[in-house]
Length: 168
Image (tube, rainbow, N blue to C red; front, side, top):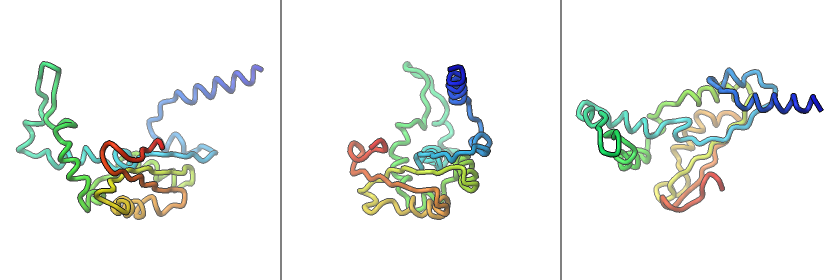
């Protein structure tokens, strides 16, 4: 009975650990992990890329915080860049020009050492890409697609309000 309690306590303590470096934390794990994650904003940034494109000398002032009755507002907030995000995310070379985030590099190290299986879920607009997003397929094939323990599952949607979600 005491042994079961100790194991349960250790399991709970393990779940509460803050992981600062994915690779360092899991590189010595004996069992293979399964990671399911989105591509956009996890592997490659979308909104930060838009911010970097539209933040130039003429726009610096619009990026500064402005005090309003509702609190602090920023010129390049989510609403103000919505149209810009929609335009840029469908450009033919968007994924080729976007940097990879640190998490991608850490996952890649774990994949190379056969410590993790990675399943990427990524939505695409069927109206813009009727046969799946070829840009995502291409960047996946050139990177994580070289490893049999990685897969890309593209989930199409027809409009902003309808379509299959990643939970389905």
